[in-house]
Image 1 (tube, one colour):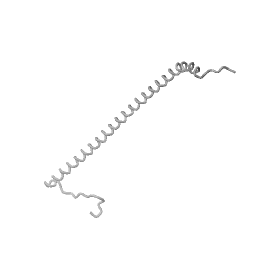
Image 2: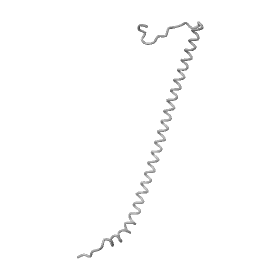
Image 3: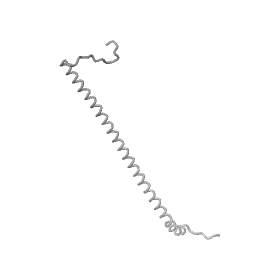
Length: 105
């Protein structure tokens, strides 16, 4: 019958060997994981900045369009006021403004 070795003796021999082998392995896995997480965080931050920049550019374009249309409307309003003044002074002949399809008006 082979000699029986108590399990605690196996543990006393295997534990230091496992510690020497597993500690560097676990440390490497954790170091790599932290590095990957930092790179992903950096990439997400840059993507967020790019989205914010794009949103700011779009907002600026929309505001520029609104300002341009408001200036065009204001210029048309000023022209209409000038036309009304001219009609009142008798310089510009009165014309009838038509709206719609022109049927039955």
